[in-house]
View 1 (spheres, rainbow, N blue to C red):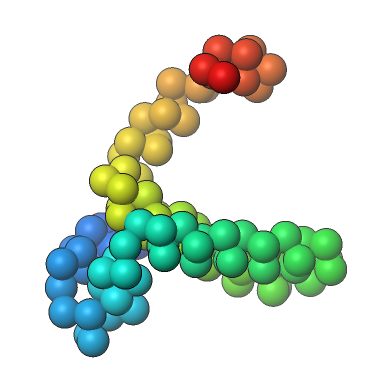
View 2 (view 1 turned 180 degrees about the vertical axis):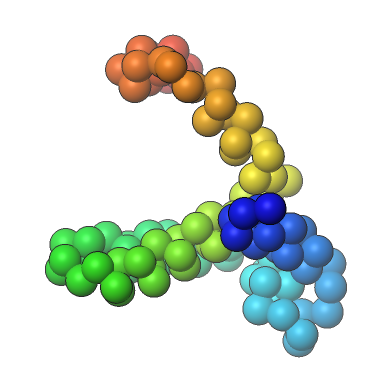
Length: 104
């Protein structure tokens, strides 16, 4: 099991648990909108570090982004397996073709 799979499993296990015991449970209890807000904040921080060029800080922020992405998705019932299946469906398809297939 990869670190990302373990993280997704931990997030799933935290859903509905006591909020005082887990940041993940606390965040999920605040609802999907708050989860999305936190994801956005972390994404912006990652962009800032990418522009600055600090590899170590970008790595740390990218980890935060992945965590908050999985929390946000979990809050809406989207699993890592769902995301992986979507990515698998895109394998071998040009990015331009894939974008053209998307509903507008």
